[in-house]
Amino acid sequence: MKLWEKGTTVNEAIEKFTVGKDRELDILLAPFDVLGSMAHVTMLESVGLIEKDELPVLLDSLKKLYQHALDGDFKIEEGVEDVHSQVEFLLTQELGDLGKKIHSGRSRNDQVLLDLKLFTRSGIREIVTAAGQLIDILLARSEQHKEVLIPGYTHLQVAMPSSFGLWFGAYAESLSDDLELLLSAFRITNQNPLGSAAGYGSSFPLNRQMTTDLLGFNNMNYNVVYAQMGRGKVEKIVSFAMANLASTLSKLAYDVCLFTSQNFNFVSLPPEFTTGSSIMPHKKNPDVFELIRGKCNKIQGIPQQIALTVNNLPSGYFRDLQIVKEIFLPLFSELHDCISIASLALEKLVVNEHILDDPRYDYLFSVEAVNKLVLKGVPFREAYRQVAEQIEKGEFKPEKAITHTHEGSIGNLCLEEIARKKSQIVDNFGFEAIEKAVSALLQ
Image 1 (cartoon, rainbow, N blue to C red):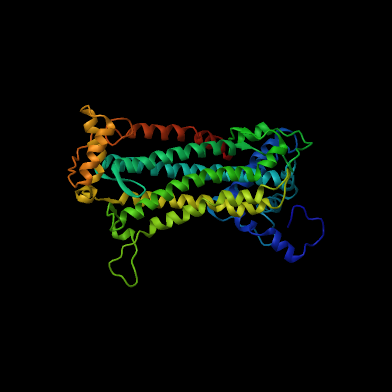
Image 2 (cartoon, rainbow, N blue to C red):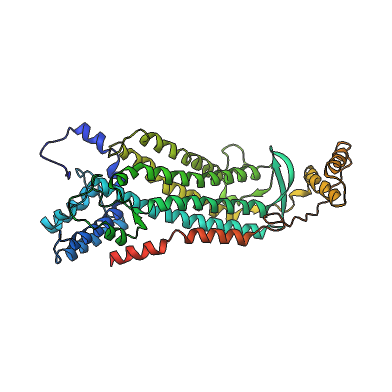
């Protein structure tokens, strides 16, 4: 069953190729397609395109479909082209001609635009929640181990003293900035395209502000041509923001892989968080972080895939955009899994508290020695020369007391400030207002 069918049977090979993975992927969009239909029919009743007594009948059936979609019971039947067709087919099957009225004033083009916006909005919320929890874990571990010093590196050479407080806290703040970028992408997402129809509007007296409010959008894509142009653009912007977060996770995972090696021995994982070797009985491999690194590196390629698919398209709808769904929709569960498993593993990460007992790290304190001379009145360049000479002669004796006090340093981690930054960013998403609007629509 196809909404556009006019009596001509499509060649079987052509149909298989053009439908692609839509049936499989559209299951992810099902609850959002139903929500959009609920808002749309509510609006149609307000402008006289559906009778007053017909609206509760439609809404009741749509609510049942919504619950089926949430429960995983929604299926796109063989021969049905996509989720939009399946929803209309089921309504028509149950309600007869009344079910056929729901498509007035819209096209599958703005339906899929809306579905993708609602899906993305929901997916971003899950990512933000998971990332917020990971930030909290990192801040807690930073506070827990703030006194434990570790080597800091430049060029992978021993450089200056760092600490687990700094290391954990650095990733907490980095992820907070990643959420800031995701917030910008969310604001572009959280605009209603419904009513743009096939990209050129409708002669029906649609009330687009009403559907915007019913679905909890912050505002709408006002220009109907731009609403259609937003397909692919939104996915590219959101995927870039998520790739940025994945980049932070990948770097963190690389650090952990490095730090768990015997050559570093800064941290270790509990045995149940590692895997072994089929021939080397001593091996305890950090596969979990290697896979986080690999998956997050893969995610960083997704914006380029989307860009290469959509960048050479003129305005209007083209079937190329179907391919973007295959790239974009799985992104959310993949990144969410990486964040969740990183949270689980980092909570159990075991810290070595005696790293700097090893004399190989004595030169970490050379800058501290230079600075102490400067504080006694020795010009910096002369102090640098004196300490360098001690090192060359093998006479350097480190003093391992650290007295860093400025904001963000070993002795002043600013963890409360980072936590506050994170909370302010999360609050700015306004998820509660969206939840309130959607809950009202479902009542």
